[in-house]
Image (cartoon, rainbow, N blue to C red):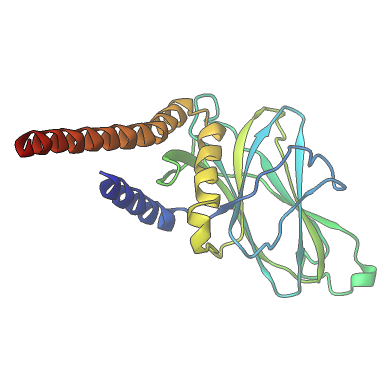
Length: 237
């Protein structure tokens, strides 16, 4: 039984890892201005940030980039009732956003706006790792002109509240230990993000049942061993 459970666990890990390209960045929801912007460790690595955005709220993220760096960002919306028409706007703020920014000492911070221009509710895609369906929104692909600090700013211009997942970067970067540390927590955070508490309950029930089943099997084995000893003792006697 233990071997079967171990094999199933390993198969599950192997099957979901290729589908999950983003490392999740957790936060304390305090990144509400440029000063408190949530730091993106490396904008080239593939990151995901889950957010609840209230009406009239704005979230800020910062990253450092160099001349010639490719930058990628995208927004997706979890397929939840009430979010069919939700589409927050993404702003890229910093030096070197436009091609005419060639002199750092003459350049102030530029702002480039990336609203969603597609149809609603939008194209869907299913993410197997968290078993969640999302609606696709805008994608941003650009090249950085100047070295410096940049900001991604997200707000909903129609002052609606909702949820979104922000993806930054394209390079998948997972180690073997991530399978047992980052990925389990990412799965749990995903379920909380989409309010799927039923799956969380089922998962904790299964995890709690494994040691119980193991104990029952051990007790049965001990009992069977004891019965054999009693019979053997009787036969000798």
